[in-house]
Length: 315
Image 1 (tube, rainbow, N blue to C red):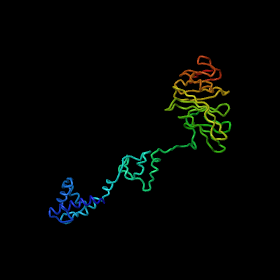
Image 2: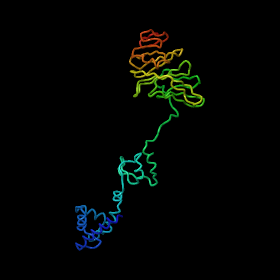
Image 3: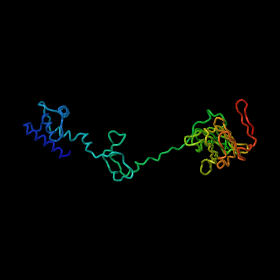
Image 4: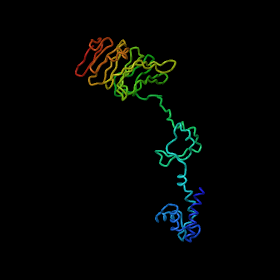
């Protein structure tokens, strides 16, 4: 206990008791109010009655002074109130505050918290930093072909199944029951095409919150040393379009046909190998270009489009 406070209270009760001719070691309600009045605390009769009801009184209506003083100075709430405390959690770099072992009050804790009894202050800096958490894809279950009935499932040159689910291109090695992943897309893939060499793959996606829909041309072969896919070969953005709905390589593999999900289902034909540099030539809706000429030049024959009501064009 704090001996100074204990002596002060007992001395105050003794002085009032002697002045009023009371019983030593006991106090009446009137004496109790007088003691705290001299200490600068005004108490109403209702509060005094509550105090006597809590700490007890004898048959004459007097409270034992020692019992009251001991209970007040050793109560849990008072001990907590007297403890050293700080507002806010430990901060990285504040080495002077690392050794603090009192009560810590911060949102959303209502009553505050304490460091563990075996707390090592050196851990504070590490605890103040956000954890380096992350996820790593191990296996993809399912297949994204429920609504898309176009050709979107192929075998590549290594006899690995190539398909997609959500925003991930999947290459499945059926011999070793192992999957390899292509992560070049940032939203759902909607179509897939296999290059005539059965190594390269083109996949198209919907527009994402980060940007327009893109077509990725990537190598589905697994590198023998790293065990990873050879990966991205070309990435072609389509500004102003909502999605890519269909893809197809030409028989020689030099050109790629891309159909976008706009109202007109615009058909784009171009030399995909130079598309990264020439993509500016692919204009807005309604424009059809090839790798051999501009939008005003006739495209190379070999592409047929079909529409409802028998409408179609030959190129």
